[in-house]
Length: 136
Image (cartoon, rainbow, N blue to C red; front, side, top):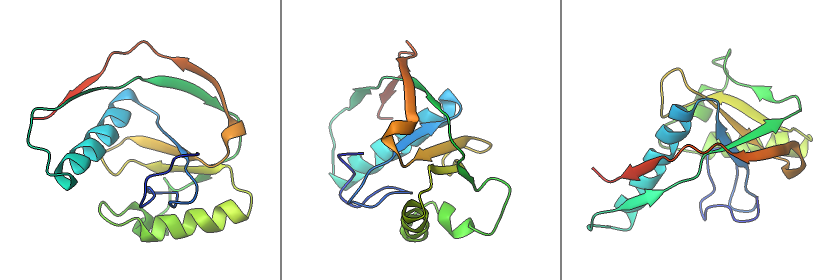
C-alpha cells in the first residue's frame, strides 16, 4: 500500500498500492514469475538470477467487486496495458470499494484479488511454502 511500483500495477496507480493475492499458490507464482521476468528484461539483467519469495496466507472479510463472470471489463484484463484497469480501480476506490476479484491474466483458470484497504487484510500468516524462482 505504501510503496507502489513507479508505473502502478493492474489495479493501482503509482500514488497508492494494493495487496495482491492469488487464490491458488500456482496463480501467485505465475504472477510473480511474469513480473520478475519483466523487471529482468527492463533492467537488461544478464547474469543468473535467483529470488526467494515468501508465500503468505491472509483473510479478507468484505464484499469485493467481481470481474470473473462478466466480459464488460475485458479491457481491464489486458496482458500488456494497465490503463483501463487503473482507471476502474480509481473510480471504485473513490466509491469506497474494498477491491476487486478477477481472473488471472498470467494463469488460465487462476483467480486473483486486489485489496484496496489495508485494514481488510487480516490474519496474515507465513504458509511455509518455500518457492524459489530462477531465471530460465
